[in-house]
Length: 84
Image 1: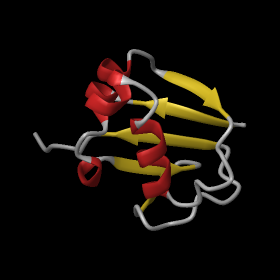
Image 2 (image 1 turned 180 degrees about the vertical axis):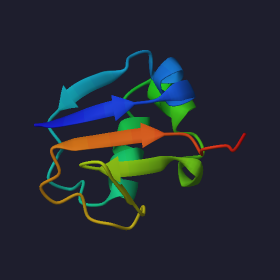
Image 3 (image 1 turned 90 degrees about the vertical axis):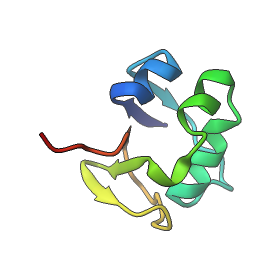
Image 4 (image 1 turned 135 degrees about the vertical axis):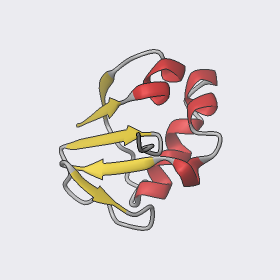
């Protein structure tokens, strides 16, 4: 089981701040996870309709979409950061 944490408009579109899920064996990379989540319903699809802009942290370390999830216990998804 892995804890997913959602931030900003990703959280708003999905409709929750966090959840715990079992990741299927075929979901090996960050990109696989985003594709898997986007198929879970309308809110997920809306939040992840442009997956390439979603930033991801595995156990609080920023990762690329082709990185393997491995034994991560927490995965955070958030939109691009803006300066200001």
